[in-house]
Amino acid sequence: MTIRPPDVRPVDSGALAATVLVVEDDQTLLSTLSYNLRREGFRVLTAADGEAGLALAQREGSKVDVIVLDIMLPGMNGFQVLRQLRTTSDVPVLLLSARGEEQDKVDGLELGADDYVVKPFALRELLARVRAAVRRWAVPASRPPTVLHRGPLRIEPERRRVLVGEQELQLRPKEFGLLVTLAMEPGRIFGRQELLDTIWGEEIIVDERTVDVHISWLRGKLADAGVGGGVIRTIYGVGYRFVVPAEQPMDHG
Image (cartoon, rainbow, N blue to C red; front, side, top):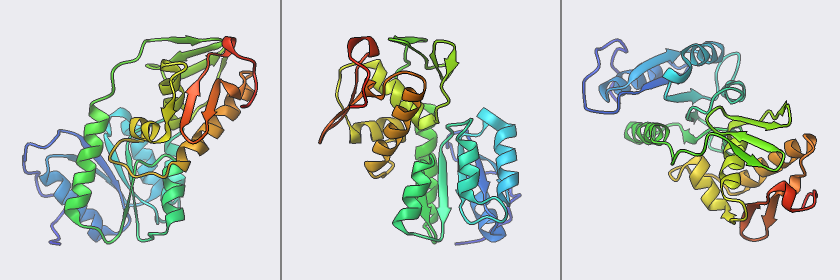
């Protein structure tokens, strides 16, 4: 891998005009990634620690299309950055780590990461993953209605809000995505893999248990708001379906 200075002017390669934030404390790797992403036509922002990366992501907001985030950072590590980020943003995040243990991957994906790349990695592979993440982010699925009314639930997809009466549920981005996907078609059975493909993306390899974990969290929050967790029914061996609350007794089936 040839190391180039990070301030070389980008080469117009016809790639997607998108912004990538790279958070990496290894200055050599940071320079290499910055240079090559710019060659691909991306606008690149950089940070060398977790606190700076989180602050930059929050300041830039929707201008950032993808975040490449190292896990082993000084101070606030990548998992902590991701946890904070997911309270306000669903921007695609690719985690970088020198550790390839399965539990690390599961932890990162369950916190809301979209992809996980183990060091050392092939530069072409990472660039391809960034491009794929940008495409998924830039081309959303068919636009849902402005408001979904499902029993006592008021779901506002564009505003990313869920209300029960006057109470707003505090949902993580993936929990919100699951609820909207299921509630759009009450009664339809969604397989776990279909939910993964729809919400996490077809190109992301995630264990199906991740869906079960997020469904469990979602059910708990619905129950706390007085809506029975049974509105999301488990179809054993297949997946889940949404039942409009007024149409069934409130239980946790």
